[in-house]
Length: 440
Image 1 (tube, rainbow, N blue to C red):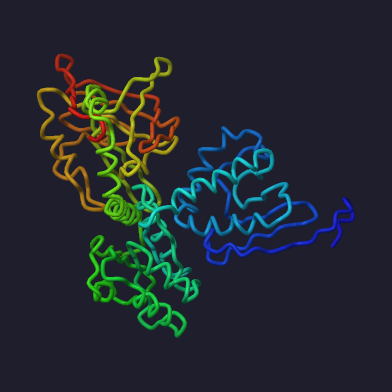
Image 2: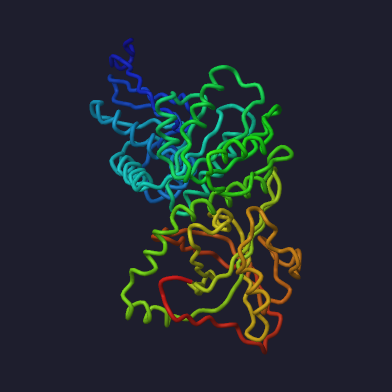
């Protein structure tokens, strides 16, 4: 119709954009105004008094975080949607479901989506993480696994077993290097049963496979599903992710960490090649950079339960006097990275030169997904906000994340120091010396 106020004739065209981030997502383009309504795509969880994207620097971090969480796991679907958008007349505004409307810097946001999705879609190795839309907790659990895979630098594609047609499902599963599936209903309807059959038929012998509980109320037992997945001789990506009650913070953390482990398997060859790629002289010179030895700890209480993590760090530096601040470099595939978003709090435990080996051995070991990092370690509970203080640490600093700068394989976390204390003013900080500079 025609808007009686503006006189503009509104003619809508609808573009199918599945998996962004729901299976039935549809974009709507108004030819009269040039506005494209995109539901969740291109959105961000950012709220201010600005109606439009007038300050791109302010919203860019949230735009990227939203993409990584909700759009990145379907990078191939993002590229398909962008191709459909290319066929439209000039777009004046992208009207998103979350955050400011995108108008003043539209080219920047579209280029970001195109670049990030192209990066995630390149290469032969990707993981297909399957889910059943609106069944149990499939949506959130699958997204946690997919986010973990993406953190390790591996490509991932979310696949809805209900909404994906047989031909596309067969291609996505057959071409994947890893396949993760949920438990499905013990008595699936005929349409879902056909999709499950397509899934099993498309599996290849050398793929990595994993499974997780959908917690839908009447699931096929997870051991039965895992057995079917292994029937063609596939390799086990991780132990079945069992959910015994309504999923909480620890369950989502286990899923994310299992995804990261799988992502590291998929990128292992690329990682080894990167370690060998630096010039030998440069590598040795870079390794002469020294640092202290620290353990970063974080713990968060949420309505869904407690999440906690820890990591050994040596790339730490004071960064400001007023307010007192520091930077920590955190590899993108570290589990603790999810607990170091803007305004999150953490504790930097400074290890002492004469008594750090025990803590170092403990926190350097590989933990299973969701494992308690602090089991068997002396901690001073309540000494600082944000995470446990280690009883054998020389000193601690309680910090709040203010900014995150993205590097190629690390996040640079800038944090203000809010509290701190020293256990022994006479002791020295443990120092870390490396021989090479292209891996830890």
